[in-house]
Length: 415
Image 1 (tube, rainbow, N blue to C red):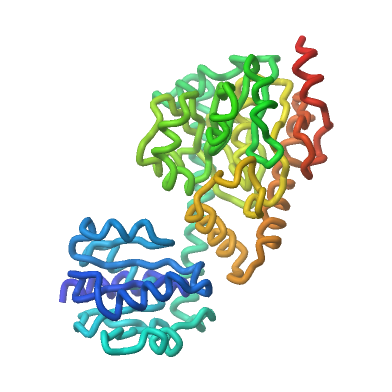
Image 2 (image 1 turned 180 degrees about the vertical axis):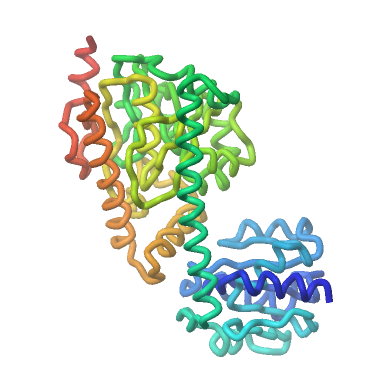
């Protein structure tokens, strides 16, 4: 009865996700039978590449090998997370063992018995079409949107107030003190912001060994082709933090700048890490006071640019910022830039943002490029207003907002 009440509570505060499937065999004791067969069938079906698969086990530690599979998560039976997933999953795939939970009208309980054909189960019970949302789900989604907007206003007010006091030397913690020590530390100097586009080469980076540079995301994948190492490093994407945090910590030895939300997601945090508060909103603007918050949208270069502004750099050059489709072949300086899982997670996030589950790679690329161009346009306006000069030293690419310069000319004519 207690578990039913817990599930009942989550069911009435959770909207059903069409692309979540939860699996449970033998009351969470095993990975076997018809449930396993259905899972492995869906795992290999391209029609379900955007789906998330959740396995419920009494002892999930015994099944960690499943985490290597595409979009697969493990949850411990009878925990709050377990009931949340059951409330959110559109499809429940179970063995013939009875389960005390009961699905809502928009959810589908699928009994995958061992003697049933897997193809029949999949064809009969699963659909990639969205379900018709009842009034209760619409109310939940509307309430969540309203609460998120209220939270956004609250964070903006509180961060602005905190930023005001910290800019005047009050209410500091260790992190904000590190930020304050960086203020105008390179006043009037120049720096290079390094993207990860296909034009980036080890030879170009070698020319910057004596310059102040900001590396971003997984630029360390090019370290084997150059002796160059970034002076600073920036990461803002929570996906990279959660999926590649340990790799990032091992490879990057430069001071790391990130957002608080991303910092919290890092399982292994680099020692020299400084974070900034951030506001997640599509209405991007350059805040100009890093002690308050930094709005990060579309590209990690927005964080790198604001950190450069904060540190006093007044001459900024972009390199490897091609503004091309990162999910297309040749979208980065190396084809092994990211893992398939990270790429697919990012694609699904974009689909959710656009509220469209059937998008081509070209459409996804256009969406990313359009959002990036908007960010660069606003950065350009802020820089012009504050006497900061930004140039594009990228070889080729689509970014024409900033004056083009040749990298060799800039390096050879250092004042």
